Amino acid sequence: MTTSRCNTHPLMHGLYIRVVYGLCTLCVPSVLAADSIVVPSGQPVSFIEFISEEEADIVRFRFLTPEIGKTYQYADVADDFQVVCDELVTPALMENAIEPAQIVLSMSAVDIPFGEDDPDVLQFFEIFSLENGTCIWEEF
Image 1: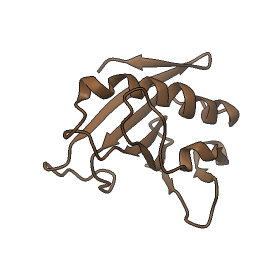
Image 2: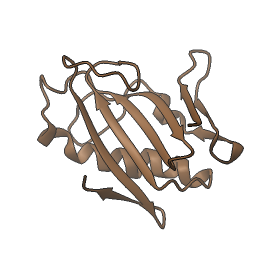
Image 3: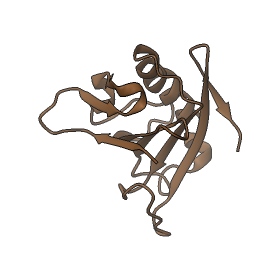
């Protein structure tokens, strides 16, 4: 599996994500690199990492949400996923002509390495597809 990962580089003002996907470079607006992202719940959200799985036609955007499981439960943050997908992820993908079959968004109470499971760390996941420039929630 070809996987490309990128996270915020401390010397960059914006976030530049290298993507194996079509041998292009995805330049995500600096709003993703900001310390906090505004969402309906009001919870603190910050970008962790972008992962592209070219063979599976999946892109992943991982976010740190340290208050989930404490102040915020899933019902409190469910609408945040749609806003993040619509306002941050979709424009970045569209700008770079990337149309994956799946977009996986995750929120984690602690920044743990991708693929590792820690039963003490709460994580929420949602899957979307991109259709005509619109983020469509995919029930799983």
